[in-house]
View 1 (cartoon, rainbow, N blue to C red):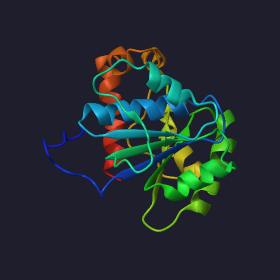
View 2: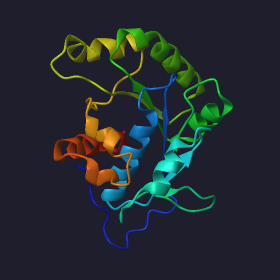
View 3: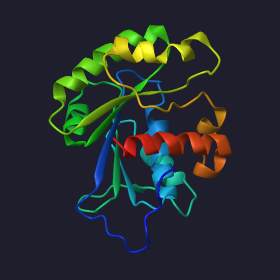
View 4: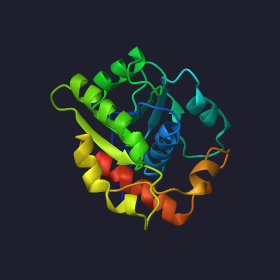
Length: 206
């Protein structure tokens, strides 16, 4: 679980930038960006969302969110403990290249579907070509259906893609879509909250 920040503990100058990316649409990139942002906010972090996707879905989501602990739309010059960058579903876009080079940690959202593997492999190669020293890039398997053959082959898929995966995964849960309402974090079941917190903890520990 994420460690809560002690009252008065200043993290300025030590902020972490996390870029969430994917080479195609529909993989849940913005949903993951928001779930992670909400998880870090619940853990007491000051979280900013930098919405680089022209569709602006993350921005609209934040504007409608009714929660005491919630991320902010990132503003220039504001110090955040965690800055999450949501990107367009096109890794060739200049916004994505800039977001990868800015980040401390890059998370490539991956579907366990074999039909998506080619796109993910190409995405992994492109991301790795942008990386500089000290940056960390990892796969995050999303929309995983437990108990299926595909769910049992994730290690092999990560090896074929050529990028290490986070230890934890996000399963296919309807409540993640419900979180796009004004309810946000409170729309998640307890199991879903624990799942997102474990993924956030994985990213924090990279």
